[in-house]
Length: 263
Figure 1 (cartoon, one colour):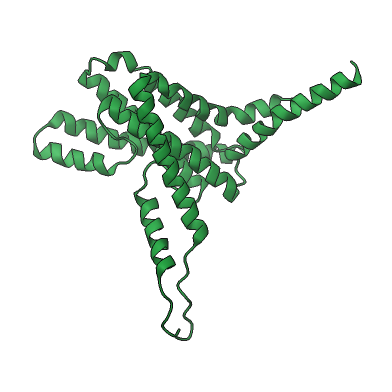
Figure 2: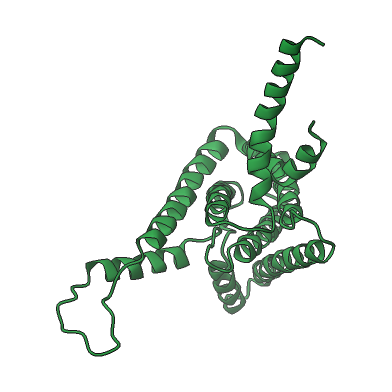
């Protein structure tokens, strides 16, 4: 093979390997702040899209469990036992998703797998595709079908929330913005605090963690952007709008497989 052809081949392989290297680092066990933030942004976008789009599809927000537990209490008091059962099973599905993530991550770590966070991500991608497959059936709004769709989304969100919690050592959440908003408010309070009183021995000035503020603001913005894209996608394209989300998750999860097979 001519030298120029070899050079072009190496250049092409390099260009393919570079993004695969980056994607592979997102699910690898050695963590960096940058990898955690990038994974957090990706998952916040997905959660926002599924939460907003899922509401248009099945009339239920599924990325956080506060409303689900409240719904269970409401429906029990109103004696709507079918709806109460759906709420409880959905909550259990979220818990089950989180438990499955813990099992998969710990099993991968015990087996010495480098990308210990890839399998829960791949399972989430499969759940998103399964949810999308309900598109045609859900048009008739059958109770059982809608309930199953809600349960699947809750399971997927449980997988995701546990995954980013383990990845970031509980510093990042992506399926809801309540904690992020609270932390952002705390840091804003520190930022505007006027340190005018003389300090006592051992005291320090109140100083905001600007890096933490930036991370929280970015994640909230990512969730909001995902919400807009999910709502627009479901409004104009329907359930097929879940396919790009599943493909992105699946690509990140499978990147380590492809990179090991690259030249």
